[in-house]
Image 1 (cartoon, rainbow, N blue to C red):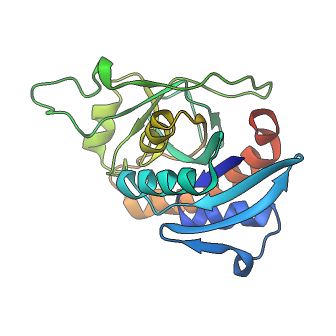
Image 2: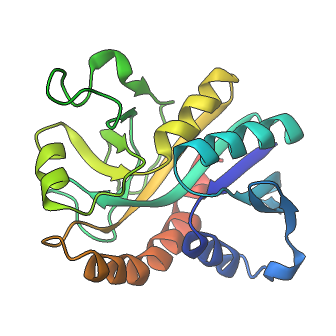
Amino acid sequence: MIGIVVTSKIDWDALLKVYDIDEEFTEKYPYGEYYRTTIYDKEVILFRTLGRKVLSSGAVQYMIDKFSFTKIVHVGTASAVCDYVDYGDIFIPSSCAEYDITIRELEPLIKENAILELDKVKVTMKYFDGLLGTSDKSLVTNRDYQMVRETDMVASDTEGYAIARVCKMNNVKVTIIKGISDRPIDNKYEEQYEVYEENAPKVIREIVENYLTEVI
């Protein structure tokens, strides 16, 4: 069985809309909700986790134990870090790492031994690959933005590494597909969030309609 997981409510609503699923028919579990369906003749569980690393990792472990997944695809949004990706671009990271666990005054932001290599994918559609950074703190301030731009990071999120780490610990295959939804805008969080709200449903639809066919 395959699990397809999103985190934010906006991403979840967009996912349900693509598949024309009424939320009242979803089932509840301690970390959110889920829906059983068949996609491309494969049995699939769509599920949402509560956000950030602790809750998303707990949710994924719970669902692995409940459904014995052989593969999980994490679909979602990410904030751009590098200059060569823009809103709407699709990012399938080849590796991921936490970047909020180091002593910044003494250690590199991303240590080599903290990088988690992800399963390789064969996707014919255009996408960017590289390093996804995960932090419990959303990437919104200029200070943090300038800090991460000194790394090889392509984009940042708040759950990708945690989901991938739990999958690896359980020998479950994992693929992360992110759509670039926003980037820091001169410490203007409300403006950045409005950009995210506008772009998130678009990139979720793009991923579901054009990329999931090749990874599940």
